[in-house]
Length: 190
Image (tube, rainbow, N blue to C red; front, top):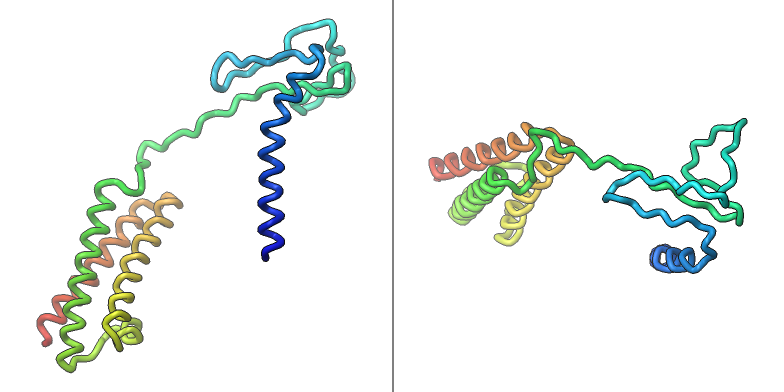
């Protein structure tokens, strides 16, 4: 494991050094390399017409962006890359509605923790089979409700990243209603 991490670090440093040294080395080469100066952030630039450039091949058409020069070096043509478009209905994950839903979900989980702990201290029994594993101690019970809230946020984030925005919000609504139901049931059955 250490060997693969070390190799990854060395490879990353080599790529970084190449990215820093290669432009300096190329600029120090002979002046037969045409300078490519983009006019904008994503401008398409072709090499200037010069007598030093070889004529274009007639027989074969190449899709390679590199063009060979007379000294064996390659001039690389800048290619336009379109900026990512934002969907009209897209929004940030931590917007006001999600923040509110997560806060309400955490509030109901906290209320469920206190009601459940009180009922267990009075001789009650945990009804949820998953939470029953953690019901033996107060820290275990607190960890159960903290993991529940974190799980809701994680599932919502997965739905957000996969562009299932209705399911993203629905996850919080389902958790809020389940926690509220558990609190109300716990308060009425003391």
